[in-house]
Amino acid sequence: MTATSAPLVQRIVVKKPGGFEQLQLTEEAPRPLGPGEVRIDVRAAGVNYADAMVRRGLYRTAKKYFGYPLAPGFEVAGVITEVDPAVTDLKVGDRVIAVTLFGGYSSELTVPRSLVFPLPEGWTFAQGAAFPAVYMTAWFALCELAHPRPGATILVHSAAGGVGTALVRLGKIMGLTVVGVVGASHKVEVARAAGCDHVIDKSTQNLWKEAERHAPKGYDVVLDANGVETLGESYKHTAPVGRLVVYGFSTMIPKTRSGRTNWMKLAFDFLRTPRFSPLDLTEKNRSVLAFNLSDLFTRQDLLATAMKDLYGWLQQGLLPPSNPRTFAFSEASEAHRQIESGQTTGKLVLLS
Ligand SMILES: NC(=O)c1ccc[n+]([C@@H]2O[C@H](COP(=O)([O-])OP(=O)(O)OC[C@H]3O[C@@H](n4cnc5c(N)ncnc54)[C@H](OP(=O)(O)O)[C@@H]3O)[C@@H](O)[C@H]2O)c1
Image (cartoon, rainbow, N blue to C red; front, side, top):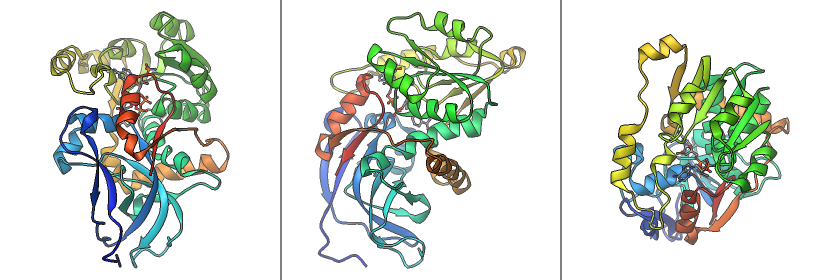
């Protein structure tokens, strides 16, 4: 039961889509616990590039199913403070990680039991909150969609980023040769430390010439969340029977001081984004796959399989905890400014 005198819940809410200033700290009454749910005292919330798309109003699921005002955030770590009687395998005081379709930027969260997982032994809350979204994304891209065979060669764009480092780590677990691409020289060591066999620094090197040098016959899998700037060449550098996995469009969003959307550029980039013809795909013998994680929150079968694999690798010591950069909850705008700068490495996390 929720006590009526329970403290107010702090949430970082996007009042209406827009720039960094739209992220505002609000206080709300706690939500009642639903059947089969648990209440979590959130200690850390992961920040993802997708949260910035939610803030900008460019994340379709946010608009379609929820609308604004809306608290962004797909992942948290914290301590369970209340458990619905239908939940028998978790208890108050358990340290957990949870995923959520929005609402993670909150000091407290109620979520269905199926979205809650144990915080690995010895991990901080920040490390826990940095884990699920990027690894679920990487798992879905590599293990579910592309599933390359051991020995295959893959090209990972933005290999020093949140999803990028997760893709590199999973690629190495799967026995792949991983070529990572980064957009700035300070990211080279981060990509290498994640496990890249080769790193291409596209700020100083010719990306596609280097990519050809490392895989003259093309790549078995290319993982591209850049969109318009690299998608055409990513397709060309996918080997016959290979797969191009598309999962984001970051280069459509200019790095601006305000965080507001440049609709002219967006429209222009939309028009010049490559279209893939079924005739060409068949003739070239390549596949283009694309996804977004939103549906994974309701696909218990996929989520459970992803987490079983990921926790299995964790227990074998194959997935070390990350070292996320942390911000206070009140600094959510700054965290968005940083992730949109394109200069960050690894994960960003808000501490409550
Ligand atoms: N489909 C899905 O379900 C799903 C789920 C999670 C994430 N994503 C996508 O995966 C990508 C990575 O997400 P993340 O949270 O891990 O972020 P991140 O990789 O840590 O940060 C974004 C990176 O994208 C690159 N980039 C290219 N153009 C950019 C621009 N105009 N502005 C900012 N960055 C730009 C930069 O790396 P380099 O310069 O080194 O390339 C930057 O560091 C995003 O596009 C995100 O939307 C998709």
